[in-house]
Length: 384
Ligand code: PLP
Image: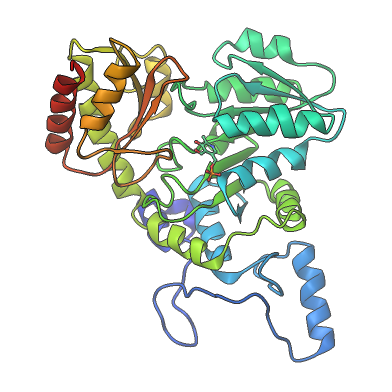
């Protein structure tokens, strides 16, 4: 069987992993080791040389490569339909090394206006300070994206579903534009996961994730991944290694374990989120529900084409009223934790007083009737 013929749930469980040939352990061990020992100096030299040329599955030091992390990388590559994937210490390590791999001083990057706040810090503070120019545009406006391209533009960086406003990016159109202008098209797919969207199939060159979120799914490990052509991923590995952004083997193992239920969790969260979004939209206290699965979402038609398996667990809402109304609502919720982060089996709510009282919801895998009852009582309580 080739992985190309297997379905996403089968890949989530099987890809990258095999029974341990020595012990017959079914599950991938946590190779909690910093270094690897060799029989001879020549053997060590050969392993170091090959590992630093990014030969797959060659290990000499766990900053550069580790067998538990490698199993996770193979699973992620299979799920994204990528030649290779590199896992690093966090989603930000993934974003940073993807961008550093394709941009040099003097280059220009076109990026979404709506992005995770620390990705904006990376682009606008870290990269700009090193002589990389950045222009932010509304990437749902293709003319604006084309107009932002300059002779020195080398990359287009977007989020497939944007954080926090939930814009759906037209990946095929943006990929065509990137090809026309010879840009490396980098897509942060954190909000959707490869179970719902595989950007490489739509023409992206690199896909990045905060694996901390839906991939891990249990809110217990921070990690990130970059997937794509091996020639590009090799450059990412080089930067992860040189910047010291290695993930711990234990965190790789936690993400690996979480990923076996990716399909089950994404199905549950998508189904729950659609029902919660429909419920919230029906309530008079709610001014806005931004969820791509609702016909009221401005990009719903595009979402229907790009997301046939579900619209995911993320939504943004806004209540009528002020910051105190928002506060009362959030505090009254009993099944949603007030927390940053997302993609957990536990529903999370993230009120944003500095962003016009937008509230980001990450809908988990609880029973949907319980979630809706909880939102109903919290809306009642929000009136004060
Ligand atoms: N990309 C997106 C869309 C995110 O929402 C986040 C974190 O929330 C990141 C990247 C960064 O991920 P991490 O927290 O794992 O560094």
